[in-house]
Length: 326
Image (tube, rainbow, N blue to C red):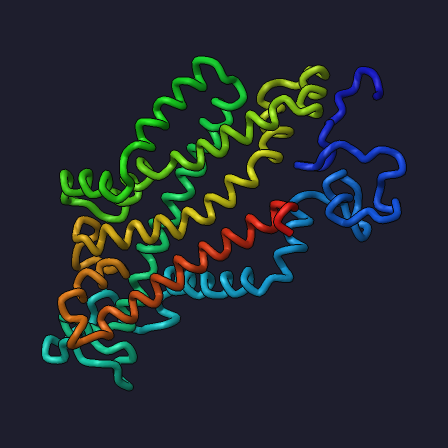
């Protein structure tokens, strides 16, 4: 090791220490995954956990199928005018209430005689927005406080752990229902705040456990002996090697939050008319399912496809990031 010069023990971000002599990419019988884990090269490129995971993901049809569905839903949420020329609750005719699918109305009409296809398209925005926003804020909370608790331990770890236990003991749907009933005037912002309040506990526990597992590794000890600050150690050496499982859980969590938001809408404590969302459409359709099944069928199909796509995407990412599952 060169004196008076700080050496990054991990090499490229997230990579393990360099392989021992004779154990590089040219060693007979060494697999690409083993070379990547050792921090060598595969096909002339620097190998890493993320590079190896991408090579694994791009060959899976489940990964691409999930991305296609989620890209379609995201396009509906961001650019609804690409799919329908009608706005929310626009062009409604009470005389056309609860009509079945036809050439003029592909998904039929709803209780107010509005075009149901346009409502399903516009319903993607609040559903997807709440799911992604809740997961993003919960991920940031887990990243910061999970890192601090796992790295420093002691009283700080105990305090964060006890607060986490309190919120972990609150039932997700029941707790959100109680809070939303107490404050009946709410929209997507209030829904996001409530779901974040109850949805960060799993990720922070995983982040804390990963940091504890990594903080005493040899390359972290080497960086500490070379005089690296706590901030540099956490951001450069611990975070890249501890974040992968949290990303997997976050991907799965988007689907769970969307399902939770739809459940609250269905129970009548979530978004309220004239707002539109798939869960709210299911709530309004529950009394008319027998005579008018299209009112329940179309939002249920889009909601189920979105949640299932996030879950399958999370499973694919988990399998790609865990060499034991390949």
